[in-house]
Length: 237
Image (cartoon, rainbow, N blue to C red; front, side, top):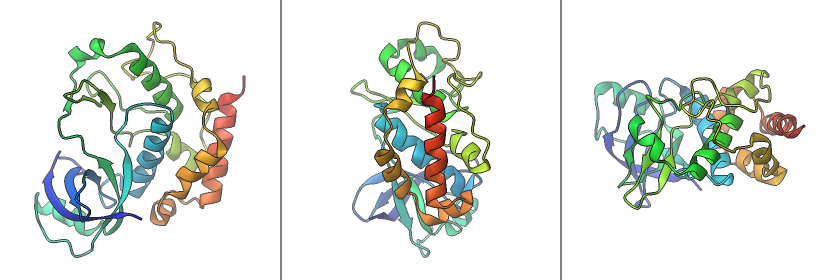
């Protein structure tokens, strides 16, 4: 069952998507991604599936949950524009678990990241066709315990391409990825795809709210069928 948003503490970043720190009725804190923001529900479906697959593949990624946003939530933080977006977003939205002591890593810190983490990250991002992990914007955080977390999977193109019927199996990273051409990394997209069984894939797709599927213009069985076909193509020698 989806948790319900009770409080918006603050908006974390400017721009069209307005990620914000919220607390649910159950007392847990999340980074909220809004259905009514620029990228829309398609981006929420993309990130939900991408995070679930990344976690299944062993990458440290904050857990994603569907959060219910009440239609009458009062103005608690942010600008007029943010509140208007909030009002356009009642119902299911995406919540990503908030890591309170984590900070964004800068480009100069990327060489300090563990090779195992980078290899796993490379396999996941290649499989999901993530075009938003650059040197300028690596989307990696590190908490006080030293754990590295990959964040922001909304720009993974796989689900969008599957929805358009144009997904092609790719075994390499996008050219702009900060790990592209890193010969020292031993990662295998094919090996990653091998670990994703049909029951796991079905469970992930089952968790996508119906309004998000409507924005993808895909019924649940068809999305599952296309994802399975993509993974089969990646596994093929």
